[in-house]
Structures are given as C-alpha cells and as structure tokens.
View (tube, rainbow, N blue to C red):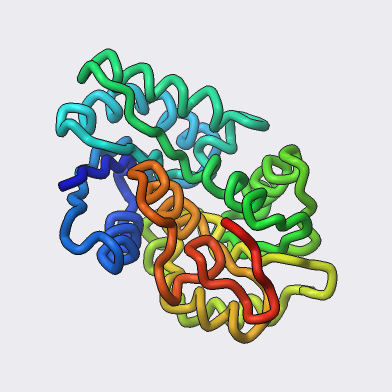
Length: 252
C-alpha cells in the first residue's frame, strides 16, 4: 500500500476527484490519498501567496500520515512567486516532511510537474486554456516562458471565484480550444489549473487536434506515479500519461 499526500486549496473540489480517478486505473487499490487544505477563496495574487505561506503546516499534516509522495496541488499559487519558484517550494516542503517523519519523500508541485512534463515530451511551443482573469493567465504564461517555452496563444475564461472554477463544464473545453490558433503549436495545455475539470475532454481534444494534450492534473498524476516508482501510463489520459497522438513517438 502506498500513500499519496495532497496539499490543496480549501476551496478546491477537483483535485481530490481527478487524481484518484486517474490513478485508480493503475493503482489496483494500492494507493490511498490523504489531504491537507490551505485557505483560498478568491484567485488573486494576495490570496495565492497567503496559501503558499500556509504550505509548511499542510506538509507537516500530510506527513503525519507517513506518506510516500506529496503533491502540492495549486499551480498558479507557486507561479505567483515568480520564475522557477517550484524548485525552492518543493525543497522546503520536503525539508518539513523529512524533519517531521524522519524520511525523505518525493515532493511534486503542479507548477513543477507542468514544466517538467513539457520538457520530457519535447514540447517547445504551446497553447493553453486557463480559467483565470487575464492578469493571472499572463502570470502563468510568463512563468512557463521563463522556463524556455513559448506560449503562442491562450484563452482566459475570467472566473475569479475558485468554487466557480470547479463548476466549469469540461465538456465545453473543445469549444474553447476551437477559438485558439493552433497553427504554430506543438502541444496544448488544456487546463492550466488543477481546479478546472478537464478529464472527460483530454483524450477527445488530443484526438481531434492531433497535438499532445496535457493538463495540470495529468502532469501532476504523472509525477506522482514516477515518485512512487511506477510507470507513468494511464490509458486514454493524453500525452502526459503515455497516450501520444498517432503520428508521434516520444520517450517519456
């Protein structure tokens, strides 16, 4: 039995659904999930940074469950701190847990998982769909581009309330993608937010566009599996989890 720790915003209603749903396909009942929550209602810079400040408490709490891997599941919270913030935050959370339970465990952040997965897939130019107000979407774009990628087009759904983000209909994602210019892209970030539901549309959009499709959730799930020493493959979950467009063969 392996234990997965999740650190999530208090208003997140998606991550504790999508991650277990994804990993249930490969875990054979061997994975359990244990969460700690940091207060967040409105998705703005001040609130996001307050959530990050609460991360050490959350890490200590999930560490008490003797977890084997921990995922910090708020992409934009870390990105609000500036380029490559995931590196220091992951290290700090790892130190908290190590001091608490006496062992090192892999620490995954959604922000770090996204950029590392894009690199693993060899994607350089991407388009993205984000639920945020445009200034926050710009912050996400700047963060991704600071890591060497180019965002060639994006769409902001302009939803500020985090609970409302969790109620967005994933069936509308193909409609949103249809408004993007895909001509210069070699990859698609279908949901640049762990709170925006996306799983029902990931494979559908990948099949329709012919582009590798990833989301904040599928990238996080990929790194949870790798952190547990498991193969990062989930059938029908898009490129981050091993299902690539038919014309592409990329070692991940």
